[in-house]
Image (cartoon, rainbow, N blue to C red; front, side, top):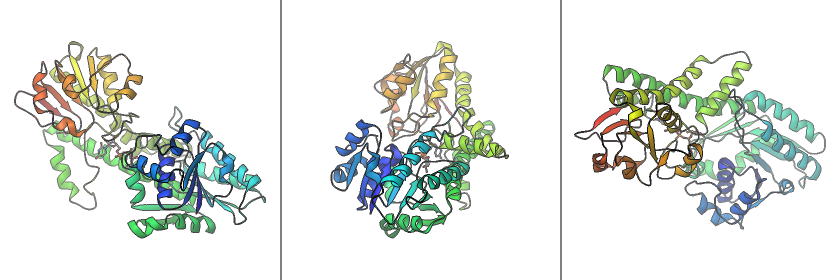
Length: 430
Ligand code: UDX
């Protein structure tokens, strides 16, 4: 099938490479010429395991990138995966997506090379009312000039395992009111449906958008719930991980996403929860539980700082911050819990030395004036306290390195450090 993907960010590039791996003829369209030449050279414009390999196999074969919208005119499906930035109040700024949808619809209305119509499938995360508005607009632009159908096809990829998640989905959500869109989307993903047996959900576009928000809101709230329970455990002197392991055996609860600690970061959970709260509030319902989930998440970094202050005066201390990425396996620092922790340490007058195996460059742009170490060992050398914020495997193997600290105070936000003799160790929820 001839497929175009507009937007070559993390979701769009993974989608384009993944569809090429399913043997489709794929054209990736992006306004950034550097991204386009990177894809054409078979190199991933973002850090994502397995993506370089897929691109190098398919670029120049059945995958081409271009800056020209005209390249979409013979596509059976045009996926749109452009950014949906947040506004100050948490709501989604739909302008970049709207621009892409309008350009796609105009190109197809004026220059279509197909007489059997086109499907425009939105991958970007937008709220149900925004989906309705986009559908009205696209149909108006198409008019009688071309047959266009709109679909919402949300993605559930995790950073760091996006390629693997694409090839092994647990569900595919096809949101459309129209039959051509339904048929073509199912055909595009047929190899995955045959191999990975995902749940295939056919619904309308607004419900598809809500499924995406509900999925992320549910997982974010699950983490905040285990953090809230974990904070209760801490005040009672109980290990929240022992409690989580026990309740996880109840398959109504499930064992995953029960790791309590300093909370969730990343580009999706905080943004999507804020966006659905904003959209719902505007429509007349204020979701109090989701607001509480954000409040618990915002409070976890402060709880780490409170634990630190129980054992030392930050203003007199050199504090090592271990882990800057929002989770292991990525160099992404968006909404990383290390950001409010570093801010809190600086407000308290601490001297901060930070370390991360891959995200130092990104954090240096955010905090140019703190010190950065080249290894965890170097960060710990002479530090009075260490705060652990990302569950990198290498932190679990530090062992003797803690002996180089001036005071061995360790506050662990991710449960990766094994307490040792002579160490003052505090787990956030254990
Ligand atoms: C998430 C969703 O999982 C994915 O389906 C969606 O498409 C995008 O958002 P991602 O942001 O890549 O993916 O990361 P994920 O692995 O889900 O972790 C998110 C955050 O939650 C991380 O900061 C992680 O450390 C934290 N987390 C996760 C916990 O604190 N405890 C847990 O038990 C699980």
